[in-house]
Image (cartoon, rainbow, N blue to C red; front, side, top):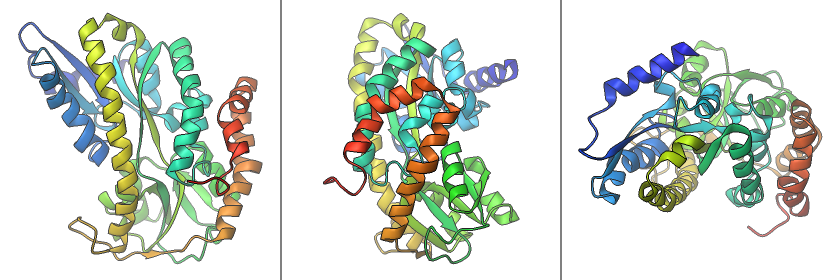
Length: 349
């Protein structure tokens, strides 16, 4: 742990310009480096917009967590300790510390963004209360990445055609889904996806439509299935003591502006879900410079039905086994009640 603190301190010390005279400079650990959520939204908000919004009184520096020497699974713990006063934690990685955090993005739970919005609305009040009481963290935003779908080297006709394939996953519930489909789940960090594909360690990968395109996955795979398996949610929060210690006017600005940042990230992630698929196919609508030539495996009714069957019989029960009775109670009173009342495909979107 001491090594992590030292690395993070060194990154900040090297990157940090002096604070404005009489002002305060915040230190932010953001999301994944190099993708649009960070480059187009998080980074400019903290390094440019905050100073404009406060007439130069307050400013911030930000570093992506995957270039800060901070393992994603440690982020929530570091926020809780106050080592990271403001941080972005991938919820699936943080679920290793607190399985309840994995509830909102269980593999197969949100086959479209409307389902995700509805489930998060039911879950968010509980999430906010739990983070504050259990971890001493104030929830400021929930970010999403573009839909995570399946990319493969070899041809396949449906999600039922994956037996024996080694498939990159990024969460325990993705592992449960892949294993139930007959595949072999392989936990691989985002930055290592292409290298693992090139080495032959994996032949398929579950990752974001646009982030997969951005890292060049369309150059090492030939087929993709467009049905969202997960989305990849991140919570942005502050150590509660650090948040309460901020000047009241700064808290007011952040309380007003961070929800706008969240809304912008959701809108971009929804847009990029479609654009990522277009770029992987090589459609004329793609604005990227290296268009792909991938083939889309059309989703079928059987795919959707099998995903929901696995969610119900495998993914949810195994998540509950890793958690405890409190998780079941939380599920029944939040996401579960919404999901049971309007399972995917039964409600207007």
